[in-house]
Every structure is written in C-alpha cells, then in structure tokens.
Image 1 (cartoon, rainbow, N blue to C red):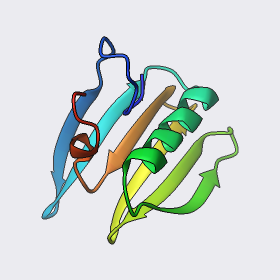
Image 2: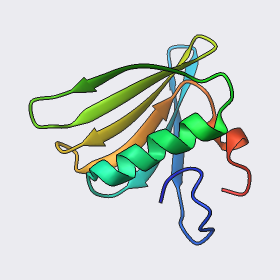
Image 3: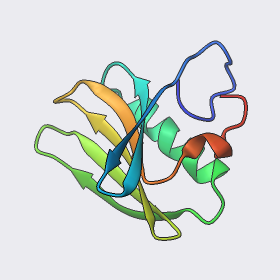
Length: 102
C-alpha cells in the first residue's frame, strides 16, 4: 500500500497540481489513517531516496502526524491524518522515479 511496496497489485493514486509556479505531487497511500502504514511509508522513502534528510515530525492534538523531509531544498511530507482519515504524501518532487514499477 505504500510507495516502495513490492506488491505490484496495489495501486497508488498519483495526482499533481500547480501551486504558483511549482508542481505539487500527491500520492494517496491508504484510505484510512493508520500509524503502521504511515511508519512503513516513511521507512520506504528513507530507504529508496538517496540524500533524503529527515526533518521534524509534527503531531496534532488528534494524534495526526506529519513527517517532513528535505531533498535538495524540496519538501516531502508524509501525512497520517485522522481528520481526513487517510495516509498520503505531498511532495515538491515526483517520487515515482525513486520507485520504478509502481
């Protein structure tokens, strides 16, 4: 269910939007908030993206979390949102190049 998952039967929904002049990529990972899926997604990014710098992790009052990463000045954020009830990734860079076959 996460980027980097070896199960080829799982589908990752990818979308991108233009915000100002920068592209924003969004990847739906799981259709419900899930701490374990969130942790696995963070681990997959850390394993598959060279030079990825882990920054702070934010936690909301409802236990939602955002793990922030930096890749050459571009931000990658992994969300475990209890408000939206999903796990997703928002990125300034297209992550599919780091996960061939996804």
